[in-house]
Length: 433
Image (cartoon, rainbow, N blue to C red; front, top):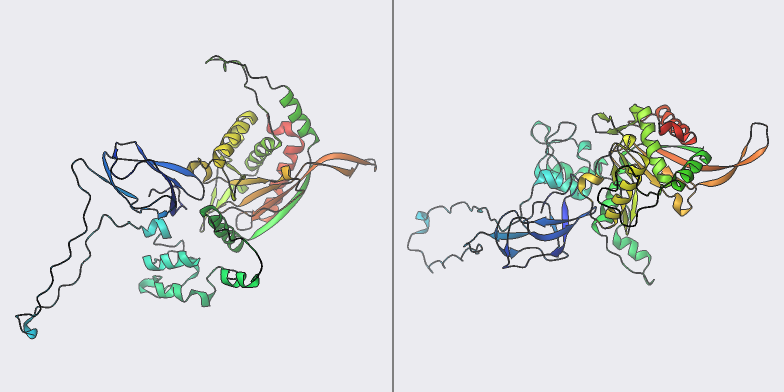
């Protein structure tokens, strides 16, 4: 089972392209796996015969697990070791003279899955410099315990399994709600349907609990007049050329392809420009340091059936609106088909969540670690405001809320970033030149 991203620890087999006994060549697709973020076809890396399949469709395998075995030309699949011959009924050697039994050794078995604590349960050294045993890392991962909050009792301060087992009393475990049994007991006698968690929903739940319990959120809200922006968008879309019915291979030269810009395309471009104006906020939290970026890599939340994903627009500040529009449409389409590659949804410096298309006026979004900011965008609306002469006029307005990680972005810095974004959207020509 390959590693599909830093945070991926397992994958579900959703399809087999080959059956046991089939001949395979390097590059032939063997099986398709699905993680909480994406789906991917896994090819063979060597030629031979697919001699054994260890995981059926629908089963979940840990990263590093042996999913199947390819036997080389002329090779036979490994056989289980024969049972040892039965011992004689009585020993001819007197008991005191019998040799001491040899210590039992377990030979390396290629048929068993290979587990890597580094990949599955985190590094052996915490950000604070303390070393941890493999068992302690596994227990901490399974119980949702932050190892950086545990004082090790082993040699040289090493964190051992007993330290993790004592962690609940020290408050190192993330808070959890009632158990499934306790919740179901409240609804005894009431009709309901149980929906088991898939890998995406399970990961979302884990990461959002982590985000709300470990990131000190604070929120800043602003109303933005977008009359000029909407007029510019309408003018740009009206000027978009119609696509040729049968364009020749080189028809793209000297002709702009058809496009339809959304309000979100302008928001992405303006947010990227605002992070360039306030570079101290174009950063993420890295436990014992802050990483500040040169470019604005913007994650854009895309709703999926049963969850969401945040594909990233790289170097958004340097791309045209039409390029951003085409890229986000392509990413969103492939995200809904679970065809994104890990490098297309991992990383990024900040994120945008837009619920305006659902009529939501305003909301506060949860930061996606290790990001330090996320912008929540509400719906465009007509709103009454006071004019300079004291009269009342109606303007096109949008409410946005900026969520900040106070470890990276202080109140004044967050306010400066939001003011820069507001200024850019109210005067859209400023982020297009």
